[in-house]
Length: 296
Image (tube, rainbow, N blue to C red; front, side):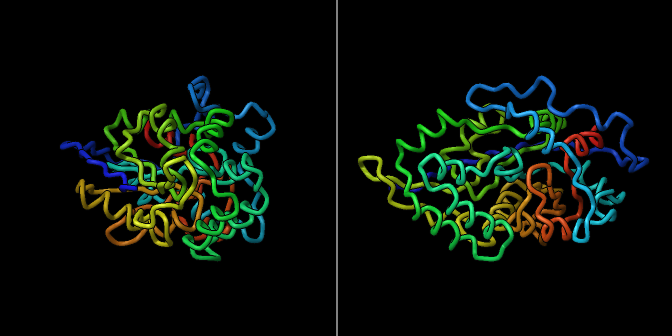
């Protein structure tokens, strides 16, 4: 099967935010996130109050919790965030409340076994390509199953993400989805959030003539360890961005912060707080409103 090829068009003008006089957020930064802007066709916000509350709650500090040095951003971090002309988002457990491959596996009857591999992949304890191949081999989803899962279990949008993306787009910041998940499952999500489909960097499931699963495209950079870093470098080089930020929850997102890649890594812990990743982040947030506050 031919690999999906996209043409990427980069805006010619960029927004340059002024330097902020203070790193203190506005007093109303803690206002309810995502109020009224998350009812999308084909995607949905969780209707479980307890789960949403957990997503919004700032985890209590513990022996291994990220310290105040990266929960309260420095002036340099804030300046970088406000001057970003491109932001790359992870999707699973960041833009969405769920891990897409876990949801698909559960729908196909292989949830627990696949979830174990996902946990290993997100902490970086096994190479991502090994974890991806192992997970898919456990349930081999057909095209019919993928489509049926998307219809019956549409992605649940994280609280506040739509408002954050809307605010960034209003400042002429380009938005990308960079994920180890699957392109087929992200296109409806990108459409609802106003993200061009060509700005999706993700894995491509491959199917046979009858829709049977035959594998995934190994040429996609996001199919292997270090792949998000490669994708982010490609994005930056193609469009000539001066300041690029990566937001996500996993070890593969952290890898994107390197010379020629992301200038700043923001660890989003509103769904899953992965402590080894959070400790190395430039900024740790548990609520997207924390990021929105500095864009006002």
